[in-house]
Image (cartoon, rainbow, N blue to C red):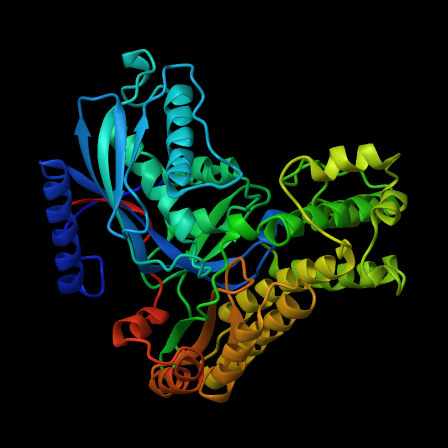
Length: 514
């Protein structure tokens, strides 16, 4: 089982000189602020999802990669009973967190979470892990945690859809574990405990962000599966000629997942849970209650439909052709389930009838009491189409990678078309794009991108473009002139460089010793 590595120095970055200067600056700031140098750094990268959006919490596979932009934290133990966290970004004020007693709960503000609340999420899952496994020094100290100072520095844009919050929570978790004597933790264990981090601030996320950040490998994308178990399979993208490059452009439309969750992210979780229950009720399926809100999931219904309704063998998630065939069939099932009226959205009373829910109180208890949600109508048909069709596109992308026979242009066109179709579905069926993101996608396709789509939670954030080393310079220039020059005139060179990132797959989370 692969462990989270401890790395000496910053040789794993593509620009060692730049990162050496960065780490040295953070180390100096830490020493100036706290009076002593840090003993180590914890680090977690952001990620870009190439295809498969809002399907991880439905337990369908996704295809992300870790990227070089990351969150690092300089850490130094102290003798006092508190943790002080400081950030190089001054909009995040320093916070001192009193260490809890052995059986005392760590309180997180779900209504208006601060950056300290996100840190507490890492503190919660790290303490629970040490208590349950007996690893580290916590149990030997009768449950007492080690106090420490932490200085965070992040290059992942916040609200950009590149998992800045997940990277922050993972870096915080690693710091707590390391400073409390946990010498090694497997990538699988770290993924498992951090997947639920942001649940404590009221976000009903899946596990893609944490899996990608922790399991990333140089020059490899990740097929992350959730059934029958959570696992990440790293594999290289085909060696096309010219070389494939992924360009990430930030729309600068901020999309804070937690703040907008009631009408956006959390609502999608509720809608797909209702969609699963509608299908389960229609076909009389007995489905595991494995969604984020303890109902059926669209993956669970998918599996049960073919095994229980049609009497076919189960799907292990690895037979790509079987998965493609069954997802295509499932899209027809969804089409036939809803009337034209239902396809425009459902009221609570209509959902009650379609799910067999007894009354309004039962509906609220089943679907609305887990996380804050806000809606006029429930778009369960459109969400179902998006989940099953984007899951299909993930498998078709994997098949294209596996069947690559050397025709680079055909491969890039095929994968690019899948990315474009994913963007259409994100915009029209999941309603998770934004006007400026759509514009970025269009400009990308007109100027050297084979496929462009919103990546991450959406509702703003970043767009990922599939291009090549020969076309990337022209694409960058076009985006600078026609998008940023038009909508954000006067941006500095540094700001533009931060908004447009050329990236290859990068290494996952680690401890760094300088």
